[in-house]
Length: 282
Image 1 (tube, rainbow, N blue to C red):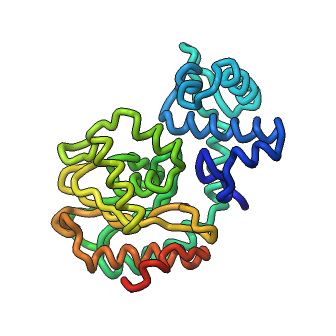
Image 2: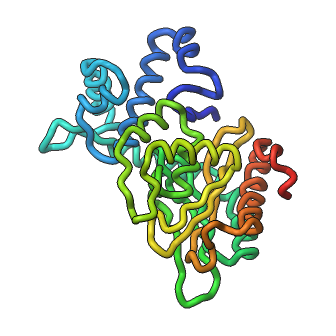
């Protein structure tokens, strides 16, 4: 099933061209998806003014769509303010989609092999609102202290390895919107400078992995690599999280090789060829 992978393209086709061919109904549908995506990225209730500014659209147009979506139960207006948030119907639809989504089923055998090789917690995430939603975690075996990934938790877009993977392959508008927002540091090692982040995203796309030593929690490191589908569209990331004692900064080449091999094998099962360019690593 086709999926909207950014604000700018649909299956690789510019939205402007799709809108031009499709007329007012398609334009309205595309705008609705952009609006919902913007609300998800806001992380909480948002004002019509702020949504209109982010989208670069008139407030009247945004308000009209919100009114319709509220009547359908897809968005809600908070009782004590003029702010809007995603509704429970969207949550239920998301739960149903999650249950039908087979990435977790496909990825977990590969994740288990990665855990056997490294014996650190392996985490699977998918992109949501420019961030990374953890959907599966296979904890390390043994040891007195375990560092786990919690399914349902969000990895920040700018200061986590999983989040930056998602951001690196986000559409230009979504990427710009996130980078233009203040990036709060979670630790003293978090990368928050805009220019440094833009440079890092280019590096990620070139090398197909990222790591985030002590950027989210002091003493914890993570290494992640992207997962692609048959259209070479980003659908998730897989990686390791653990003590910086076992995942040092920088991560050893052999450890990175294992993470890339896992991401490549999952992507290959989905029909992707994005990893063919670094075949010499395997």
